Image: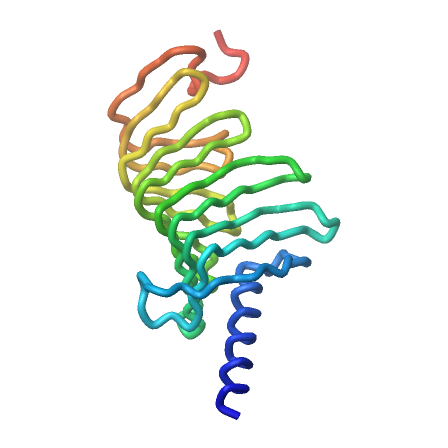
Length: 194
């Protein structure tokens, strides 16, 4: 009886892990997960090694794909912590951006992803963002950082402290720019201006 209850709890928590961030998800692929032997986080209800999750819209188009070396689910705190994140976003089935980070925490109530460590974002048009700390709002699809950031686009690199941007880096503001290295065209120049 005790073993059966344990199995039911594992199934319950795997269903929760599959249902993470799935308010807009209509389809979830079944993946065989591995339990983490030596955990970096304590108190998690579920820990999974080689985590992978894909989300599809109602038309069957891939929206995003999340992979992580380790995942820790805290059911009571309504959060999940990931290590070595590899997050790809798609629109209309086409690649839009890749986000890599050493550590991330998703708060499922606020729908915020807080990223730490070496953070790297590359968009479909090869704009890049490098940061040490960043927040991503899954509803507004906005990036916020108060740490040191570097944005590169079309040969120009801008460094500074603080960032407010959309997920594609089409619109961004570096709050306290510290250096600009220009080559190619200026990403700050308005389209069509001399």
